[in-house]
Amino acid sequence: MPPGIPLFPDGASTMAPRVDALYLFLVALSAFFSIIIFTAVIVFAVRFRRRSEGERPPAILGSLALELVWTLVPLGIVAVIFVWSTELFFSMHRVPPEAMEVYVVGKRWMWKAQHLTGQREINELHVPVGVPVRLLLTSEDVIHSFFVPAFRVKKDALPGRYSILWFEATRPGKYHLFCAEYCGTKHSAMIGTVTVMEPAAFQAWLSGGAAGQSLASAGEKLFQDLGCATCHRPDTLARGPNLEGLFGNPVRLADGGAITADESYIRESIVTPSAKVVAGFQPIMPTYQGLVAEEGLMQLVAYVRSLQRPAVAGGPPTGTSVQGAPAGPGASPGPAPPGQERP
Ligand code: CUA
Image 1: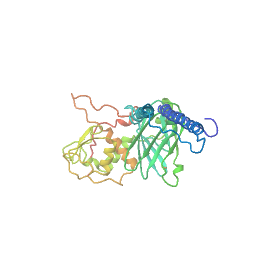
Image 2: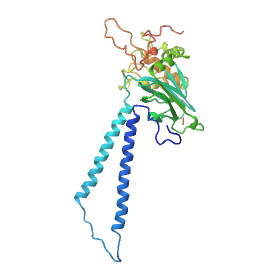
Image 3: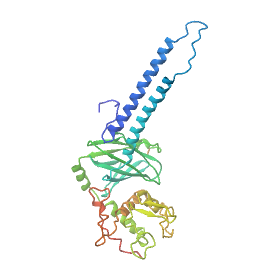
Image 4: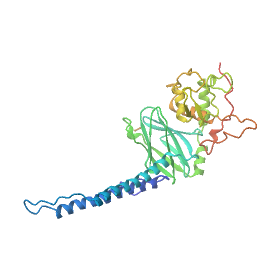
């Protein structure tokens, strides 16, 4: 980057050249028509100015050809913009299935990231180059916005909700991370660094330092500590739905509807259990709103996600896919249901 004020931010993701191309097209289009319009204004003002007192211009009674031109040409241009930007919009929202997961919580005034393997970072995010990364974003307090200009991605982090952002970095380096939603006194200090590393260096980074336990096993511990296992169990004493093999699958609800169990559904079921009661169960679960911080909720989500249905002898080998974790050390805490009971 040259010194001084850069005209254009660094581009370091697969999305960057595509966003820039659309942006430059729109700028060029606007410039082209601005030049035509302003030139016409000046030329016509001079050429068709009134030359004598009492001069009356001839009346214009319309022109079909002219009207067709100024209707069809803009229609064509707008159609091009629509198709182009919609295509870009969809690829920004369609996360590649092999994407690596990172859970991110915004909080006045910092970004807290948790990797599935258990690494936690504040105002830093380490990712490998050439690998799609899916961020599950939420906020602990007010609305923040996760913005990495070099990747051309920005997504609001909303309290009480999960939003998803993905990117694939194309160049190792350090890139700015901003909060792009005014969130109070130190909004301008809510900044950080995204460090893009070569895959080997990233693996070394993952295995070094204080990794601690994986996100799923941290979630399992919370699950036991909160007593969730007393009701959510695979045997006949269960008073709540069995959570094994739940994630990613459809759930039938008591009100007759159905929903696919994703992260947002699991989070909602912990903080507002009565919102979507599973068919065949009573709404007896107490709310855990305020009892578990957002990071803890994400650990619980990671744990529920990791619970696969135990393999049945002779059955099809389902549920062996490691969801979203290429390295996968956090995704295999074993299919064994929480066995011990708390009195
Ligand atoms: Cu967080 Cu602005």
